[in-house]
Image (cartoon, rainbow, N blue to C red; front, side, top):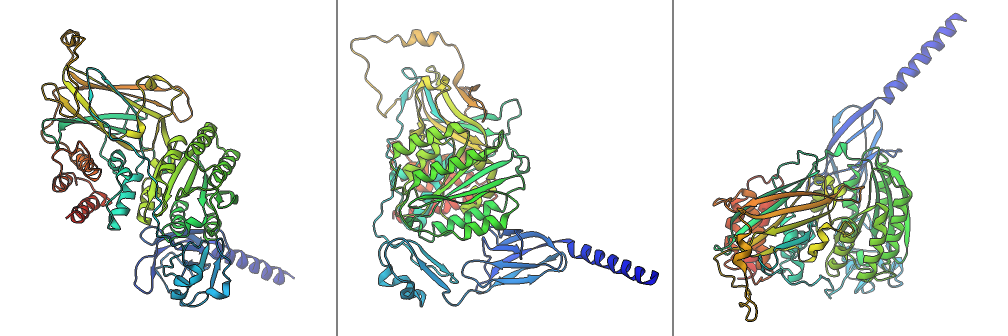
Length: 627
């Protein structure tokens, strides 16, 4: 009996020991490649088989996952054969996925009544079958990776808000300049897409302030009680050397990602027929996976989609259930009309239902902006979002695609929804916005940020704000806390540039004649002010959960102009000059593409991700297009 008991105890100990060994967790990391060309695969799914534990490969194809010892890892990507590997110890595991050779499934929904049996066969058959020519929505292809022209249209119906450039204003007659600080950067990546397609950008697609603010700059962190910091620099204007330029920079407090408040995200995804292009819904899905990869356990995500109607495809889910979230994303298909208004209403309802007090409550809308059902006009959407923002839920708008992109609608949604607007033209841009700049894109540290500049007519004859045409405010709006303005995210750098005509230099851009029936007493006015200040910058902001603003103020002296501008200012002036050339601005002066490139090269200082060098290549491309 004793011997039997001893054996049983030994068996129990062995079983427990074995279970302990089996339960050990190990770290597996590596890169997922295409076996055909050995290129890294971005957004490949890596999951522990039979569990919700999973990640996706990053912009370099790399992954890192913690799994139980002796468990199986599944590696998969649309159009490639799934691969399963058993892992036994901490290891570096590089995977080469093989492309699928046949079409396993083709499903068409939305326009037309084509039967599945008519669409099987080669890619050429699918791509150019008469049943698919013209506008066909809702093609889903499994088991094939090559591009299929899923939505074909020869008509360009992109829409941009029209605006006239800011002109020079007299410092004596209009000494105050007031505007909402703009953190959007959609214009730059959108015109980059056009240039890379061999097309000169549309004039109204070029918003100079968004081009400048696409790039990050070396501004010092706020150190006092305020979450923002103002920095200025003055130099000679490169396109009109008799003029001066004053750069106003604002830096928001940087919060490490791990210290950001808990997030309540709602992904609002457009799955209508117009999203059936390779650079639309497939890119949306890959983009969102990159963000999912960086979610923490305390974060939560819900997914709402809309086409002809809106629906919830994933209720609010823990950030650690990555595989569950990724599977919900992978199952999305496109087809039907676009009830964007209904989608927005449902997304706010879900966000409010899961609202986290003192948390980061945000809707992330991914769309081409082509709303055509329900609330679809600009004013209706504006009113809808203005009403919903009172809930404390912020709105980030990510634009995708070409041909029917509605930039004007998306800009309004972001502006009225207390959020920001970015255009995603490729997965690298998605990585920039959703990974590298996660905090600044997704977490607001200051809202309703306004700037008011007062110019001293003792030194300033006239001034012009470069850009920000859609963000101008009345002078009375600066002290009015009911007026909406821009938002600043964690670590954001935002820049505004003024071109100044000094006193003693003639204003050749529309100055007015002396009055015939009134005598001006400008000398008397100037004698009242003995200040040596060129101008004063005032900034107002509110904390994210407060409704009363706080004010900062910084004077700029008249004698601080630099002969040699900083690297950042050189680059900013290059971008501003390029934008004015693209718009064929009345104020471009002596600007040339060669001068843009020369200035930009002086501003290459720190270029961690190569964005500034890419800018130079874009300028060179446009220069060649115009020859």
